[in-house]
Amino acid sequence: MLAVGRWNNEEKRNAAVARRWLTEGAMGQVGLAEKTFTADFRTNGRLVGTAGPQRNVANRLNGFPDLEVTIEEQLADDDKVVTRLTWRGTHTGEYSGLPPTGRRVAVQALTVFHFRDGKVFQNWTVIDHFELFRQLGALPPRLLPAQVPATEQ
Image (cartoon, rainbow, N blue to C red; front, side, top):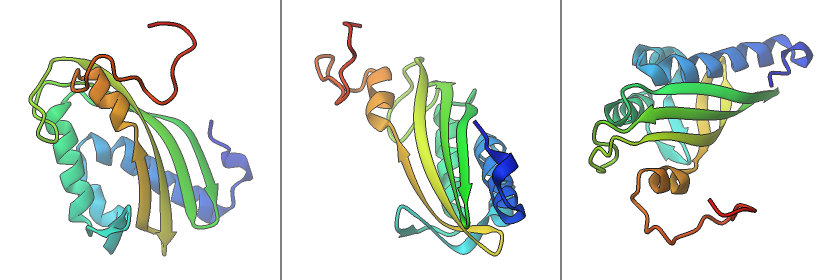
């Protein structure tokens, strides 16, 4: 769901920058980091600069070389762009220290990009790591998510 028609020009530009990074940068075009993020870029409160997103992409693509990203919903307001997305891939390489499992995963994430002069200067991202590691078999089988499904799976 993209409510572009109601956005002003700055919001449209910011949303396009966020969308491009999340779909192209996250797929390996890490050179976009210089165009997307400020030198003093912070993610979840930590100063990482433009190298931070590049390292993040390298880690994810190492673990999931067939990565696909789908933007489910995107909202823009003033200098903020909120994006809900799903990334899918097959765990064929090491990811964050976890050896490959060969399992296919689908992971939900929510990110809030804050813009200054057309670039992202900070973001807050929440990735459903619990579900990711459950799908990878890295959690005890009896451990249930906080939102228990209505029916047994």
